[in-house]
Length: 66
Image 1 (cartoon, rainbow, N blue to C red):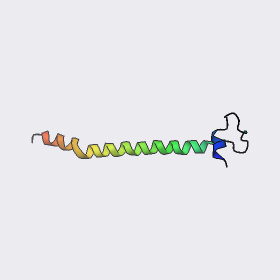
Image 2 (cartoon, rainbow, N blue to C red; image 1 turned 90 degrees about the vertical axis):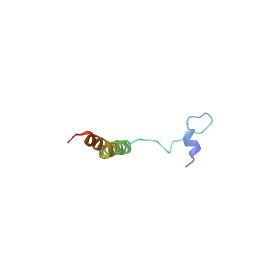
Image 3 (cartoon, rainbow, N blue to C red; image 1 turned 180 degrees about the vertical axis):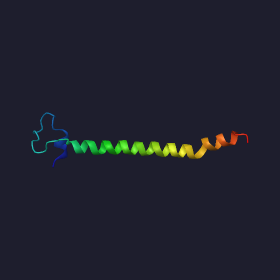
Image 4 (cartoon, one colour; image 1 turned 120 degrees about the vertical axis):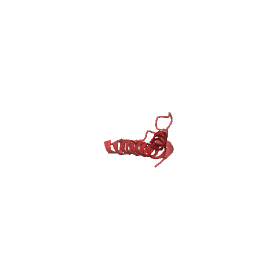
């Protein structure tokens, strides 16, 4: 497959490319999008866990007077 013809199919002077139609089926769009959403969710949960684990609970407990 000639990638230059595929990339420049609309350029004048090049023969039209009929043998390589570009289609986007639903699964090729949904799976990467779901992966991005899942990865950002995991990152948010990990950051919340790390922030709660490290400082705020110790700071609050240190200020208590017992």
